[in-house]
Structure formats: C-alpha cells, structure tokens
Image 1: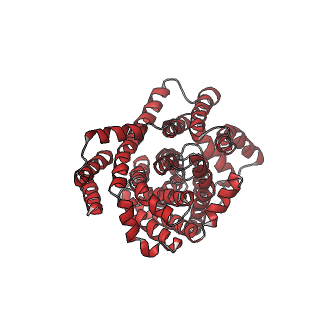
Image 2 (image 1 turned 135 degrees about the vertical axis):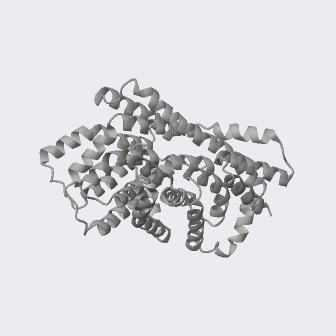
Image 3 (image 1 turned 180 degrees about the horizontal axis):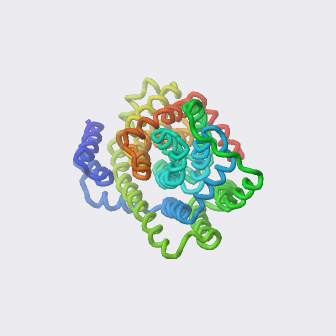
Length: 427
C-alpha cells in the first residue's frame, strides 16, 4: 500500500501539470500523512540539508563553464579541429559531430548546452552537404547525451550526492563507458550513411590540420587538466569546476577575445537559471528520499525482486528496463533523484558494485534524454534546427538502438566498466 501511495501521489501530481520539484514535495506530504508523521519542519529541514552540500557547488560552476565555453569560441574551435581530422571521410560531418560531442562532453557535462552548440554549428553545414536533416539532428542529439557520462558529469555529481558515493570514482568510471557509447554512434552512423549521396569535404592539408590543432589546443587542454587534476588528487571535483570556469573565462575573453564583458550577464543568468532548477529538484528530492527510507519502500521493492537477487546480470537487466521505462516520461535529474534512494539498497543487498551500477544508471538516464515523448535533448535540437519533432524522432532511432545495445553489453560484460576503472584508479 505504501508503494501505491508513493506512485499515485507522484504520478498524479505530475499528471496535473505540477513541476517535478513540487510534485516530489506533494508526494512527501502524502507519505507523511500515511505514516502519521506530518510535520512541516521535516520538509524545511530536509530541503535545507539537501541543498547544503559542498559537492553540489560543482554544478553551477560546471554549468557556467559550459556557457562560457560556448560564448567564448571554444566550441567552434573544437568543431574545426574535428573537421580537420575526419571531415574528408564519407559521412565526415557525422563523424565530426560524434568526435566533437566527446570532446565537449569532457568540458561542460551538460547535454542540452553541448547539443545546442553543435546543432547551431553543424546542422547548417550538414544540410548544405546533402545530409538527411532528421538523421543529422538525431545524430547530434545522440552525441549530446554523452555529456552526462564522460566527466565532468553533472549527472554523476547528483547521483553521487544522492547515493553517498565518491564522485571522483564515478568520474573515473565514466571515461571508458562514455567512449564506448561514442563508438556505438560511429558504428551506427557508418551503417546508416554508407549509401547516402552526400558532398564529401576536401581533405585538409598538413598545415591546415596543424593550424586547427593549434587554434583548438587551449580548448583541448581543458579536459586533460580537469581529469588529470582529479585523478592525481590535486583538486576535488568541486575545485575542478571552479578551475574550469576560470579557464573558460580567461581563454574566451583574453585569448580568443570572443567573450565580451557585456556577454557575462547573459551567460551567468543562463547558468543561474539552470542551477536554480537543479538545486530545487535536489532539495525536494531529499525530502522524498527521507520519507522513502522511513516508509521502508526499498525493502518492499527488494521483496518483489527477491527471485532475481541471486543472479546479478538478470537483476541489472530488470532494473535497467525499469529505469528505461521511467526515463521516457521523466527528465534526467528527477529520474536520478527519485530512483536512487529506492534502488541503492537493492543494489547493495544484491552485492553489486555501486559505482558500476551508477555508471549504467547514468547511461540509461542519459539515453532517456532522447526517448520520446519527453526527450529534452530532442526538443533542444528541434528548437535550434527549427524542424518538427516527428522528423527528429525518426532520425534518432538507429542511434538510440545502438547506444542501448552498448549499455546492455556493459551489463553482460561488466569488465568493460570495472577493468578501466581499476586501471584509472591505480588499483
């Protein structure tokens, strides 16, 4: 009955059009009445405690770094660098989109920001070269969701705080899986575009490649500095976010000189708006998480999944299918915040490595960003490209399937995650 009240109150509030953060609070209030512990102080105290976290400070700084990167010309130079390397191949602009997505993912951690930047630069070029518009938009959207997987990942920060796990280890664990998700896009793009009649760009000369590399070198050094600093314990993820922000500001304003002082207000405002939405969600979710624990909902879920607890692979497949279904209806951050306190006790009792689960969980939620009907990243592409949603949904399916297959391969072969993590951690 407790699970039914939890689901009915949450889904009912969202069905009425209530914002997710307020729906979580309504759900918490319903659970409090059911448990007979209604007290407004519980809501206020848990919301304050939920938002009062040093680790969560990384979110506004990484978001601001992403906005500064796009406004300061770093994104443009990354795309030009990718063009110089693979732009001359058949379907080269698609490979450029994937390559640039991976590099930009290691800079900002925001799927929407990366997708908007790439779509505005590459989609006009792809249209002019004769690429299918829907498929091109679908590829760029699929590349954009690599951002929550490769560090610095805002998704890992939110999950790490909610699950009380090491964000540094989550960051290191996401590197190789993120590259594998990118590889799945390369394979899918090769298959779907091999017979297309499209304009192939001329091969760049050695001098042109060197110039593109030199122009983009400061942008390319940024992810190395971030990940290297975290890996060797020089900075924490939160401190790395501050470093990334200052770096993007200095490079964009004083080196590339594309970021003007008048742009700072708009850039900061955009980052602040996104941060406020995320932090309100986190604060509201902490209230629900506390009551989920008090109501013993994880124990009820564990009893339901008890027949599968002895087989970790089957249990992971069932949980990932559940997360995939939820991800079609909810945005990334709400899904992470709602399901983490419910699923983590099950994962720990089954003896599954929480870091390994976290990587698969974030990948699954990232894929949810391009699954209709919600698909936030799909909406971003539609807005930038000014094309109907139906066209993008049709074009994204091959890449959605490829990324899902890669995710399930990581479930069947957990070594794809655990072995690189051990190597990167020096263990």
